[in-house]
Image (tube, rainbow, N blue to C red):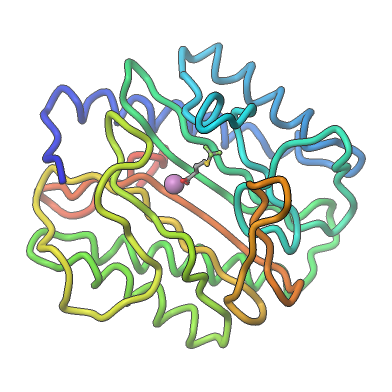
Length: 251
Ligand code: MF3
Ligand code: CO
């Protein structure tokens, strides 16, 4: 686990703000009739404008700058011209990009169209709250799995599933660094958190069972029981005065 230098942190802050700015502008793009390939192409242009370098394109043969996961797809949905968004779809957009070689990783959920389905909305709200509860534990002197336990506790209180097979991660010069940050675990255990550590925290939650499988394409992660899933992610720093969320424009 690397403690980031001041210079590294400045670059991660810039990466985070620029990435958050793209997400700030993405809402009108996520519309009925639009393909996930179109959204990915739009993100690619926005990254370019900001001198952000995609960390997913070229990673283990992945060809896109985002993962766009619809409904029962939990994470790593592959953008495609064949996937056309429909009214009511629950869409997760996940982008990892670097500015001057330092990464920020971020994901948000959207519902296509105006009629807001109560159940889908609730799933998203709980995922966002779980992320915030996890981040609130990202404090000097606490332990790594305090973050995990806070996420799990919140999600399971609402009888949703916490995906086990994928986790958050350390982040910095690389998209994925040690250690894993699971979304389940025992409070009071794991490594002690120190100033200058940076993590991508990313709860992945389901309406039903937490079991998932990877599709034949080798990427797409789906719920086994076909229930809906939500996923949100922020890149954070263990700061001297508490957690600093690098991928938010306002804390
Ligand atoms: N952004 C994803 C994460 O949160 C990683 C993208 S997976 C890739 O870990 F293979 F598409 F790059
Ligand atoms: Co991530």
